[in-house]
Length: 436
Ligand code: FES
Image 1 (cartoon, rainbow, N blue to C red):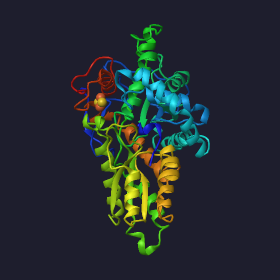
Image 2 (cartoon, rainbow, N blue to C red; image 1 turned 180 degrees about the vertical axis):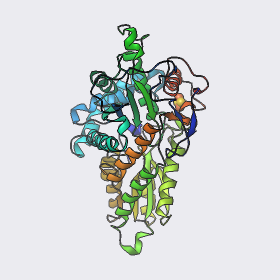
Image 3 (cartoon, rainbow, N blue to C red; image 1 turned 120 degrees about the horizontal axis):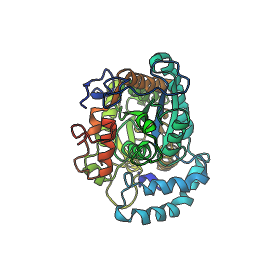
Image 4 (cartoon, rainbow, N blue to C red; image 1 turned 90 degrees about the horizontal axis):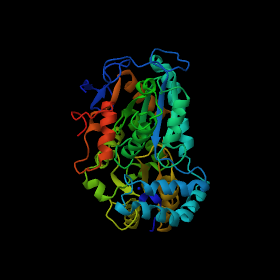
């Protein structure tokens, strides 16, 4: 099968164990009211505040997708310009525009086939807004919680989100707290890392006195204080939400075959050059899969498979489409595909799995027995999980996970280093003790 989606081209501070996040140590703010050098108290934001530490900006970061077919070219242009996601080497500036121009008509057709655009903005805005409503109840000390969305390749872009934060009364001498909450549960330098690089870039342009010479000293001193929820692959609420959607879909199979349905957890693949650099994503996706399998009681056989690879270079496998084809040809027709690395529907589920992989399986005789579990989308269990995760992060004064400061063993990117120094240290200066 020829699959043609663009992305297959795709402190000295206290470190104490978190009570619930990812079961690993997190790095904490020493005090919610103390700035990173420990010498002064950040001025409060000037907008209406209903609590001592509020308001708090909750920023959902994701790759995004074109909401209309007219937005496809801009989306592809940004995507192929991103060397963190699609490394094209020194020719990136030349090849990126060429590839995006060439692919635009085909990808526009794919978005037209799934209804005219990606639903990811609709779902992200809904999830962020519903999560904030819960947080206002569970975390009154940091209320109100204000939802924002920052996409890497589609509107609303990171710079648009940052401008809105400043318009809404954060930063520019007024301080305030913002949480960058990745909507990729498993960390990859291609996805969450790329979004954090972009956030750090715009933070420097808008709030660093060395980059923005229009800032007064007071404005520079009262910049936004960022913390990051950078990974959450085994959060119990996430695992429960996945498990419930799998159980619901398994109910659609006849009882006598239900326990022999093969579960195929499908995640976006990575080029092997990224895997061999030491990217944490494959291990974290496997951790999610194992946790979901544990919750399900290992009643069904399963495999973790990888989708959306593009181009001639080596990618992490086995490929989702090949795996489905091979199993159906061998007579194993009862297969359940589970998107395990994205939290809402997108073109890789609605087009690639639903319209390509499942369609081709039916052409091979699968008789409608290859199915897909629902994406998390508006699942109340999932939205409650987001609120639990964020609420714990806020209450504990965390800055990021302990993993954030450790770069991939093969990373040579100065951008990665600077970004990690900023987010792990929340300071203009390097913090060699944390970011390595
Ligand atoms: Fe992974 Fe730079 S590529 S930290």
